[in-house]
Amino acid sequence: MINTALNSFGAQVVLATSSDENHPPENIIDGITETFWLSTGMFPQEFIIRFPDNMKISLISMHSFNIKRLRIEKSTLEEADKFEVIAEKEFEHTESSLQTNDISVDGSHATHLRFLILSGYDHFVSVHKVGLQA
Image (cartoon, rainbow, N blue to C red; front, top):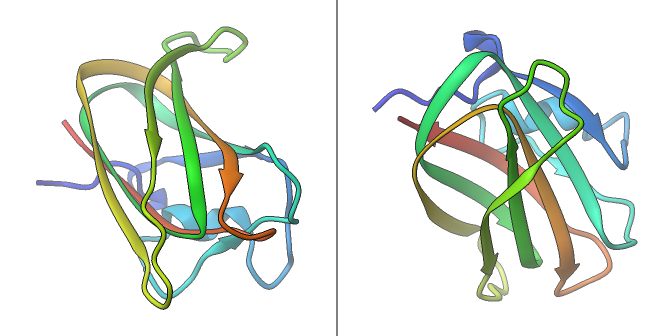
């Protein structure tokens, strides 16, 4: 299956609540698990990915570290000012490896996805890769 949450497919991170010049939000959609976005240590944290078209999404995969609770919301509007919750998940804690989670969203359509990191297992969390499958 093709990962449509890549910058090479036109996806963009249009908002992130924190930014580190060594670990910018764009790393989330570069397709490389070794690069990542790093939070600033306060919760909640969020980032929004915008797609060039209204995308059908059945599965969201996420590679991260230290995330405890995550909520995913979608918008189908051109300007993302209204979102609806499509998933909420508590991640298992991993000591020295990435958390890998697949979240089924039953064929939702979205132009924007908002990822709200509600809590973490530590003060800082990182998101290494987000993938989408239709």
